[in-house]
Length: 314
Image (cartoon, rainbow, N blue to C red; front, side, top):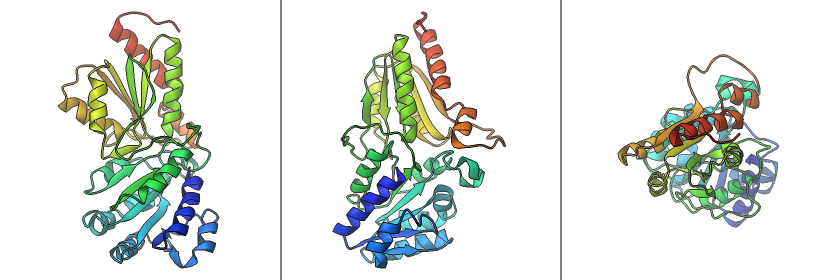
């Protein structure tokens, strides 16, 4: 996903001589092509993310299209005040590209986890928040990002993300994407957890439970109408995200359901406290926090059985 996004950024820079790429001492192999082709528009700002955002703001005020790239905690949290004051409040054309959502950088430990970025970035004024689910969507988001004249936060995985789309999907900023149709439950998902959601839906179908899978690639602006529409016809609604259970996709959907007087069952799958001190790679940590197809399937299956008051086959 990360490599695809940056590769497409090179193509965009070829067409747009105002496009700049800034990084905080990261991604040297990743940026080799960009640096060689557009050396005057590639700026390594060093391990100084607050300064990087300030420079990005200045470039944007000079009419440039600026992309800032770093690992999520260093980009979003270390420079949060500068993003808030310099970029968001002034509605500047700066794209913030955060890599390593959730536990992607598992072995590097808590300092590298991207667990709170949705909550932080959703709350900023003028900020668009987009989370592609696979490399194909990452390419779409790269292209679409140039059409949004304002700040945008783009959360990427790292490498090795599964490909969900055989062809370019009809991705539209602010409009949810239906990946699969079903009448019994709706599963809202964002980012790389979409592959898990589709796997869960496959298993549910074998038990007689048909689930719609909705890819929420845009967390802000939120597609409220799609949430309300599915709430009017489904008795079970699920959210899945690799983010703190508070402040992310599930919280956003919950707010809409509450205001819509939803009476069905709603459950969020995400990362709950206590976070614990267990260490390991991303798959180990996702398993530790229940973000596996096995766990999510079983919990939805139990909810559906309780809701319908009958037993489904396993």
